[in-house]
Image (cartoon, rainbow, N blue to C red; front, side, top):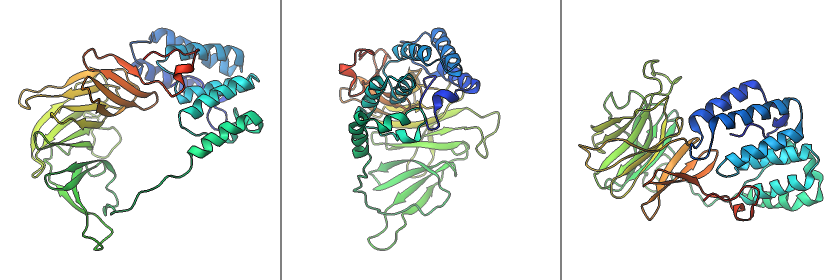
Length: 359
């Protein structure tokens, strides 16, 4: 989410006003409030945009450093962007340092396909870094096909296991419903056995997304979101979202929680803990939510906000923290008592002096 960067065809030299406007909107709704002055951050981005257009790489570098200091941790994309600017300035050693930091995260990148970073490809000092990234890009596969979903337009989104019936349940974005999936008898077919769970019309009116089994209550939890642009979603409903508790056998709705947000929401992921607490995330609005306790009196609690694009939440063993994959930033750690959001540092963060660890 930083303003300038390194992508195929030289992103640093291709920054546009449209991208700046989009970024500004994302920052306003998604950046962690604990460490960012929004007005200051947006001003830095405007400066970076101007310097990029002027190809003033020295000034752009200075602004990017300030942007990095505002972030909770340097992201892999930010590392690439700094490497790009340093390469433009002829600071090969600094660019290589950023690429080494990038490689330390376990990711790979083809610099030969990036006009900004292409000069590094012929540098002897880059070869160990390239070899490290290449080694990590080798295929690791121990998977074995058990069966395939036989419905071509199912568009599956999520999967959970129901130990009572010994079957899986898969959600279908395209069909706005859930399917029970069982494995075929040995050698009988390559297709899974699927049977639609008969949801009530109110439950399948919007797109069905996340699904999790609740062993404590013997319920299926699923999220449903009215995503604009999908068939059947009206303009009046667009952006609305809800969490549903369903009977796993009949599909009958046991409880509905309509989620109130400040803008459009997409409830894409969730998890259920052994005590029946449901955690779920809004990947569009950046919020993390919780439902717990007696189903008859339970309410939706917002436990954190301001994340970029939160994905599947996982409760820590101590029960005091929630780990959430934040799409562009890394692993967010939410203190459940205070609601404070931190981020796990990347592997090289301990030795990094320019961006001190904030964990």
